[in-house]
Length: 144
Length: 398
Image (tube, rainbow over all chains, first blue to last red; front, side):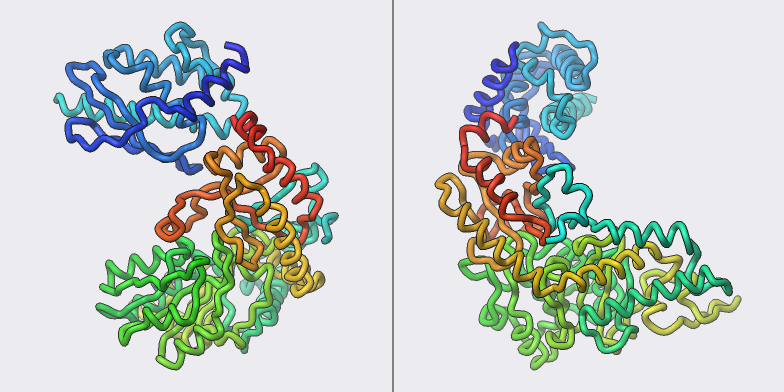
């Protein structure tokens, strides 16, 4: 991805977020994820069945990085198994922290590969994934 | 004014977040260095010159604070860790022992968290009620609206003199006069006003008044609790320990010293207090009335330039203080702050610790500019050039 492509991708998902909708349905896990050091505040609504993400939405108020990162996360992980999701998250976190990662796996999410240059925005890019990990933990605990 | 006193400004940085904390003039920093290098001892403890000098400097600040706010006597000045600490001491050390079930405390939805949460805790411990004075169409407080909320159960009114988002200057003298006619005590949070306006506790007839040194250009971690002598004497100290006791014996009895020492347990922030003293001397030298006039002029200039930009929505156009809150249409406030940061301009984005205000202004987050005497019209021009170009913001905000 060129710098211009990265910028275009981020701005596209900020102005046209993917699956940004409030869900009032008890069969979805609802997780709030907010950024202690700033004002990003999102809710994730996730339906997981048989270890597969069947449905996935979000709402809230947040910066362009968080809104776009959440959109791309949801688009990339809908229909994926928990195992695949965890592999994706690990690779994504490595990228954000400037460690070796699987480029092919991340697809559009690779647009944040230079975010480490702006330390204060790393948390914005990680925020939706912090929420997703909480949701997976909640799902796994519900099975025990 | 006096930009040469702030070394960081030489880098070209534009600092517009003075309501969060102000820059520190080099003579304030030098004064604290002087303490640490030349007389770094405890106060009121040792029979040697160093301790004597530290004590003198420490108490000199108390006198400077007394003069600054025109208190009656120096014992009405207590050093705390900041305005938050002071408000908690007032709520927990005084009102917790005075307020009963269904007694009412009046605040507004634009108060800072530190003037909200200590009262919320008294809802739990004492069964009090917290009620809100309605804000007018400019989100400001009027005496008429105070009267609307006062009942026979109202015991306390606690208000910022100037709020940190709307920046409205409250008609406190009239409010306090009215409150006192009904036996209601009034607490003034002067955190946002102390650096820009002449604050006069006697003229206001404030019962308690609090502020922090760091918003005046002083060090962090030091603040002031002012209280009328008879009220301060009734505060039950939150902290007990060294320096504040007269005597204690094995049977568990103890006698405390008089105010203000009684309320300053343990080794205090000595360097901080001495730094606060130098800050007051520095501001006195500049003249608070000149600072006030300069900032008022600067703010009018900022509003005049900003209000003609179509994509800017100013929240508090009528406010006369140093604070201006706005949004860029269609762009999240934090993205605006990041964009300005790329151009070395520091502004704050968010709810600014006034989380109930969104119920009034219907907007949760804003960009806030808060000015000080070292800001200039040239800095404002640079900011305006950056903010008027919306496509540039959209391009550079990430």
